[in-house]
Length: 234
Image (cartoon, rainbow, N blue to C red; front, side):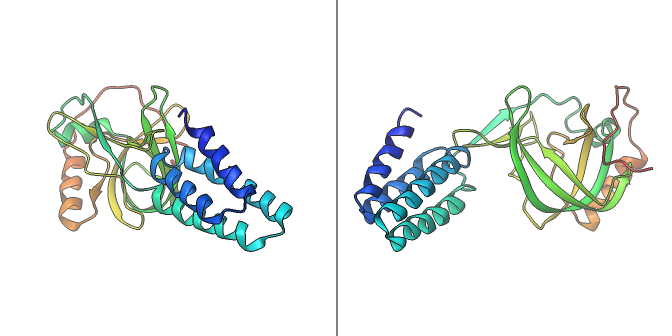
């Protein structure tokens, strides 16, 4: 990130020189090459402030508005672009045994993805993505209508996408907004729900639902410390 401040300085000079095209070119370059989301957000905030200052000092509303609008479009267009995909190998007990996985889980439910809430990191530094889910049916456990879940995977600070990969199963991508899935999750010490590795995004179809009802009916008994989610209802 050693070039981060240098680019901002260059843009600031361009703005004060009232050089609209240079400002646009450099900001677009930042959107394409500086880390997605985290650093683009900071760049956009700085650029917006500098543009406002330029409008005030130069009395040129068109100049500042042009920069801010173009920057905003570029930022929101690029923040979800997968420039690079990495796979973290995870060790999962009984990875290919769904009866064990469902026995291990606290919750199995069907729901649709309302929106992405946040991008964060675990205590171990692994990327996670927080989604708001509209629960349409509880299959194991009883959760509220609207909940938030943590997906094990997401964007790193350098803009790359990290997904999880086991010995036999590989995540195909992040959740799609508006899509409906069968979710498998576990309660955490803070009351949140962490979706279970490699069993996070099963499409909601009648065939898959029948399979999961069978997994639940014949689930294996797994002894472990269990935690209740804050979204659980009586």
